[in-house]
Length: 167
Image (cartoon, rainbow, N blue to C red):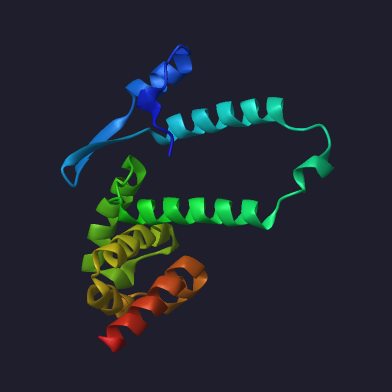
């Protein structure tokens, strides 16, 4: 995580990224998130800075000790644990898909291939919320052809069926 509040924003682009942040309350504290566009701009800036510092030969990047690998894996693991604790904040695009999903729920047998992303957003939301029985019930009414046409939907359907049968 990059604590942007500790950085001095002299660059106009960085200043705009900081001002466009979204805030939410979580476990008694305020968390700030940059927008997707802001993340893209930060990534471009980071890639540019990395390219300037990159060693000239590819061979120089190949030497890593076991301790280096272990330290990197511990850092990634700690970041993953932190991210899993954070609440899911749906972006505007996902909110629109969830709105369409609410309409599909009433008649899932009428869904078409154009509704796959909305169904995926809805099922993912139900999975995060633990609504496995609802997901399994809707999967029974949903077109088998559409489920099998999308690996992500098929994975959620199998996981929901398995979890619901074990409960």
